[in-house]
Length: 120
Image (cartoon, rainbow, N blue to C red; front, side):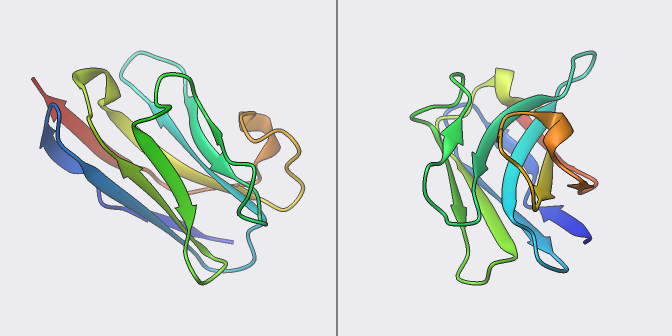
């Protein structure tokens, strides 16, 4: 399975951005992670194959929304009220046997990432 993330760019603080991730095959659970310069990759949001029981990092709850497209192999991340702390490379991940959405080790497939830069 190959994953292609898109939609990153430069946005002002308080603005919005929508990331997309397209997969080439069956995906199971899909999630977004991010990695800021000099920091570890961290979980942002995840959604199981069923589309229910979504999970969010505390830092993005109430601001970001993850959703699956009508096709099983698409996932989106709507980012609202962004802050400079949201600046990072955002990666999408997918896995057929994920039981813990927030665990990096649970995912077999990773995209190459898309850069989001939030200016103050």
